[in-house]
Length: 104
DNA sequence: CTATTGACGACAT
DNA sequence: CATGTCGCCAATA
Image (tube, rainbow, N blue to C red; front, side, top):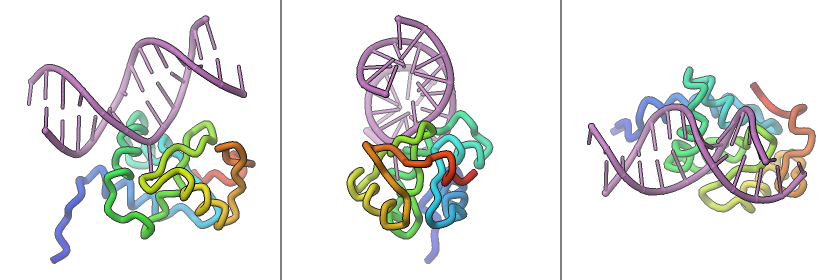
């Protein structure tokens, strides 16, 4: 029954996303580099958007390279709430101490 | 195959 | 620091 409904690209992105520890965040660009496609930050965002594993995988821990929140399929508000719940401070749609909690 | 779209990034102004 | 423009990549029609 376990049939792949995702492309290789998406599977790789999700696999790396799982490694992000709680209380930390990563970026679309870093994720793209992890899948050996450093210029595919945009495609990474698309992959997460289409990703059927919404809360199962920490999609909400992915933010923009400049510390911005980015987007979220269920709404940016929910994304911020989840981050705060995990101890990540968010102010004016930006990650506080971004460089200190970023996971590479 | 081409065109369009989108949870992006870097740079210019 | 805010906004606009261009480039980049994968998925979809």
